[in-house]
Length: 250
Image 1 (tube, rainbow, N blue to C red):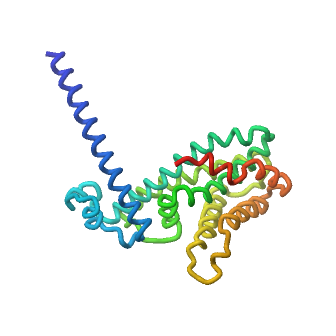
Image 2: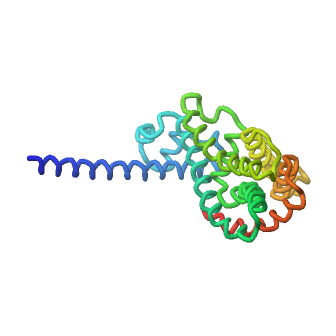
């Protein structure tokens, strides 16, 4: 009797696991299609009914995954931020080979420069995900108040990466003391703001090299927070942007 009960439990777990995998795969399919719509036509064009038509599935099916547009947007933004964080973590691990010849203080500065440059690379390598996280920073009301709590913890988890780098810089004495979270938010928002200049539709706007401007902004902020300019330039030379593009594998 116990053997039959155990077998039934195992069979139920297998069925549940298969069902969960199918559900996750279907949800990922929906989110991938939603990212494509958002990138091509903008978030205003993204609707539950429109997405159902695009995927040739019942609207009711879509609502079982996302009960409202707000829920869809929250899931879309959370997924985008998680994907960016995953790719950054992989690239950050590979980054250590580039900075291995630097002393510890130089490594700390190089990692900070590299994070700012990873934001620049993300815009090029993962435009859909990048623009969704950018919308979270610069626009309000994308996810309704019932679902915004699904996005904020994920965003804070991503911000913990640069916040930790700043704390390490202060601990090593290469940066002056300061509030790491405030610095993090200012830094990430400012770099995103500079990169958004690429979307300006105005004669002469194309003269902006937004990547170069964003990189200069990162180094100016670090100098303002106490980094030695000479040491910072040496650290920056160890993590050139083209090498980081090789490490950044979506």
